[in-house]
Length: 500
Image (cartoon, rainbow, N blue to C red; front, side):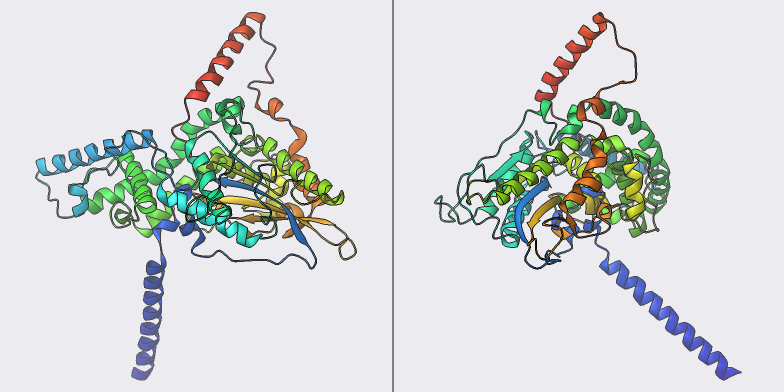
């Protein structure tokens, strides 16, 4: 009997040691920098992996590349800088109130007692920071290495078209990418850089890369949904507020927790600091806060409403047209240097997220989910932790996040389809649910199954506010026209301060 008891205790001890060691290993492997939703740095999102290459079918060669990329890591905007400055004051008030009530501050992290916002002296914000420049510069170098034949020609703006939005961080990202892409190809400086053209449309009329700013129905939808999104956040913030109040002995509010989470994301992503604001949250709390952000992105910029991504149809059409032109050039046997080989675009998370949805990527339901978005059916929210989920802002649209669509020409005698499309998301080959899970989708299937269902509504019809309402009177029409013209002028001068 005693022997059996000893054996049982030994087995129990082994199980305990295994679980303890496993949990400790999980804690050590958890990197908060990879869990910051759309504030995640590109390198953290990639986890150091840049070469999951899937070879093209034998004989297939790339003849054209489309790139849709988000700007690199940026500084907080002016609006967010004010929030952090306010947090600095609020934290000092909390500490003073606790001390005034005779409460001990021994549980309060030492960094918090004298914390000053690193951005308190800044007047402007939102600019591309050096780390963001490096992200795009390195991406440009890797892109040329991945497709050397596509980028073998001498630079000409008609061969390599580069477009960016008018927002400085996007155009600066285009410049950094181009410097990497064409490095060593010019005569400027010791590094042999060369000049190149970056084209931008007016903010007020950029339906290609800033469609979210040009779609009135989307503006209305977003304004109506934002209060509902805030309500959905409240249970998470309330639970964590209660936990942190007990943990640190300070009378935190929901707004304090929201601002501390934002500070965590900025410190970890921009300053490589993870032991201050981020250190106040447990691993499970970080997972919930990340899910909270991902849910907001899903509702307002992703699969939460078909309008979110269908307003990006002009961009999808432009990509298909560029591929068709490349096919025409190939079949007409035009000489190198006489046709476009790459169309490179630099914009925002509000561009990359909807475009990724148009392609049907990161769907929880795979092929079934793709059928749902084709029918404009609403999708369920990403499952709450600890359940696993596919939709993560850190994967879909981190800083410098991108989609590449590569068009291949294949020997007609080897394959039934002469042209194939491959999608690389953040440089990783990704299967397309709309193309029966293929990595290389026949061009005609790509057009029929992925593109065509989105073309039922043109941009103007889709984005006209209150299209179902009766025709307004001439007087109200004139007034609406005045407001519309004024809004275009105002939008062109006043960029959003809260965009990603």
